[in-house]
Length: 409
Image (tube, rainbow, N blue to C red; front, side, top):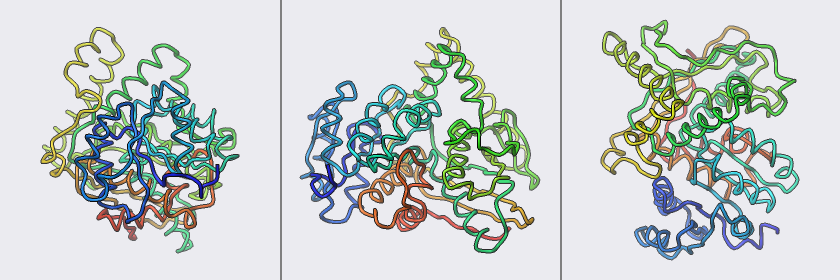
């Protein structure tokens, strides 16, 4: 079906979920007049309730029913829209039928996945089909992994303009105020359970190039191991393991390979969480490290997992509006290039990164796919934010109040 006969420009699938509601609210405020948007989910009544609480013309958005357990409903949904954006996770459990429906219909797709195993399977099963139909399948369009992906892209572009060669050593420090979402926790739990069922998946998760489009063609450049212990940076800041580093780093490396290693074949990329300086920073780093180790250890042990499930947030839950408003994120990325020059990229924004800021990132990604097609990179198939949306998304996020900048270091 050609785009000019699609009923909608954009459909939000999972609109009644916690992040889905935030996304719908962002689109109601930010989508240009005349943008044809619909809300979709398993329950028409719940989606109508969300729609009726939206401002202005958004109260007239159509509501559609679809269920990931009913592939025919997803096929019908995908065929009606130019873009389908989904917040229905864990994606390993619910996402593959949605990707397939979009790939078959030639419908652009965006999600919030932070799951290596899901993205790898989606690539293997549907990348070729999406390239054939012209669909852009864009994973990781939230806090995982937009700041990581776009800052590395901007660093490579600046180095290229300056004739500084490719990126050689890139280290990201994530700083944020906010909580872990129930959906993120459920996704982590799903990956732990998958590894428990199939030990061979450990090798996939351990491979720094697990999401590469051409694994055998990847360079031999050593990659830093995902941090497991507290550490201290040369400028005195304490760091801890960053829970999303194992996913974000693989997205960045996929972006590099999809662009014919535009960032450099000697790229070495790693991420940690910043915890501050002095004794307080050290205590925070140790506490975060211990909490992450304990949580993942408990997830691997069924009796402990049952206890953990009662303590952690449920999928679809999240903080109050006041708590979301107090959140923020700041991502600082230092890079050295092949000729020895150094640069620093910064991405920052207000709002809880896993909820408020993520709704902005996902919403602007969806609008870029729906409205900016002529300006987007000429790529289809299974993509990343940098390779599918690139500078168009950077401009949109800046206009929405986020900061993206690169300076010599």
